[in-house]
Structure formats: C-alpha cells, structure tokens
Amino acid sequence: MTAEPTFSLIIRALARAAGVAESDLRTGSAAGAPYRDLGCFLAKRLTSRSTADIGHVFGGRGRLAVIGGIAMTVARRAEDDEFREATETLTLEIEIGARALHRLGRGLPIDADPLALAQDVMNGRRSAASLSTLETLALAGAVAAHAAQPEESAHVQQ
Image (cartoon, rainbow, N blue to C red; front, side, top):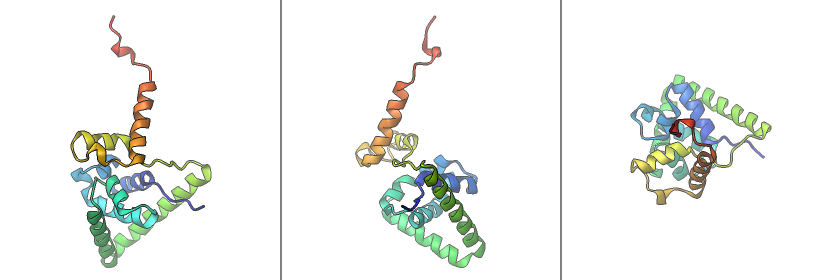
C-alpha cells in the first residue's frame, strides 16, 4: 500500500513554504490566491483525487479552474528553474511526510477542514447540499466533538 498524502498534509506544507495561513489556501482568501494553483498542481500530482475534490479543498474552485491552475503551474515550471526546484523540494517534503505518517499509522480517511467548510456554507460560497459525504461526515464529527465538551465555567452565572 502506497502512502498517498492527504490534502491536509499538502496544504500544511504549502502554507509553511509560502508563509500564509492554511485557511488562506482552503478559502477564497486573497492572501492564498497566488498559491492555490500550486496547491492544485501538487494535489493532482501526489494524490488520486479528482479535480472536483481538489477544487472543493482549494477555495471551492470548479474543476475547470483547477485544470487551468495546474496548466499555469506546469507552464511556469517549464520557464522558471528556481520555481521548478522549489516545487520539487516541496513535493519531496510532502512525500516524505506522507510516508512517515503511513508508517506511524496516522493517515486520516476524512481529509476535510470542518471549520473551512462551515465558513464556506455560512458565507454562501457553498451550499450545504453541495458537500460530499466525506465533508458532511467531517462536519458532523466536529459538531459531535464540540457537543461532547463540557460547558465552560464562563457560562455559569453566579
């Protein structure tokens, strides 16, 4: 069994390399815009996930936007040796991380950020009906985990 990186691992490595927040890559944030194409390229190159799945994770983009972003990244890699070397280094970092997590048995089957999904739905960028089954499960798990926590003492009136 090969160790396929999760979207979370790809986004974490890209955010660290680019100096942006992970949420900037997952949402339509302007701060993450220059890096989302590269994220789509890395996700397509390193995973077996569809362009539609990749688009959902990287700012709710459509599959054609993902394909266009990948093409732009491929073109830039062909023209810019420094960019190509940086993307190869980042690719190796992600692959090594995925292998290490796999060996530790720590790969997660549900690769969705519940907070980013909730923000997208609340802000109207996505409808609840458009969420995949895995995304719905990730949201339900986050709600259940939050509900299981005892109320904070700040809510108790004296």
